[in-house]
Picture 1 (cartoon, helix red, strand yellow):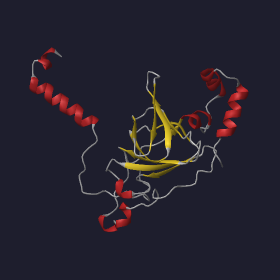
Picture 2: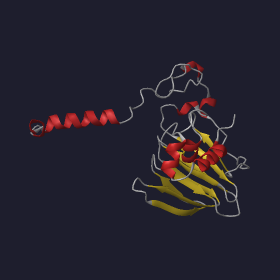
Picture 3: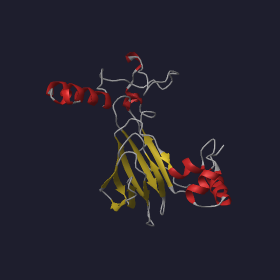
Picture 4: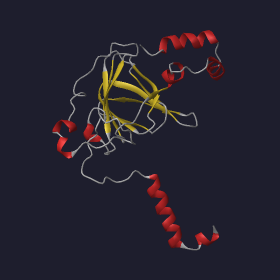
Length: 219
């Protein structure tokens, strides 16, 4: 190691190599429209043949209007990611629209592949995220304001008002992924063993089974 530190050039080469490995590669073509019908799986999606690309591969109108929020949580997420806009493949960006009924909740969840930046279209929300030191960073945000949720951290949005609310969320990933905390722990398949959950949450088996029954995936 001492020999390496005495050679600034060698140290620079090692640093650049590590950076290249850690970073996403640059695009090697103008576009790589996702072939969503391909049975081959890669880290991302295979490219459609250029002759098969159409303007609709870059278009989506699904977040133009509110979606229905008449569910148990009182919220609905409409994603505008590579699965809806194939032209996003390899571009590293996506969006979502989140609509909230009065008192609606987007429950605690994480995005393992992206940081999220929300912009409030209308209404007022109480939002927050929890750091790995278990510190809650929370804020009330309203029309025209932004809030950032760092990549991978558990976060939530709650409408505590008597009027609807909506946000547009931007992500630095074409497919950020979403893992809802409660659903992951109590609604997974196969199920997380009861003795894991009873010990982790310091509750009884009956309470675990009751929660599981409410969060069980709908067939």
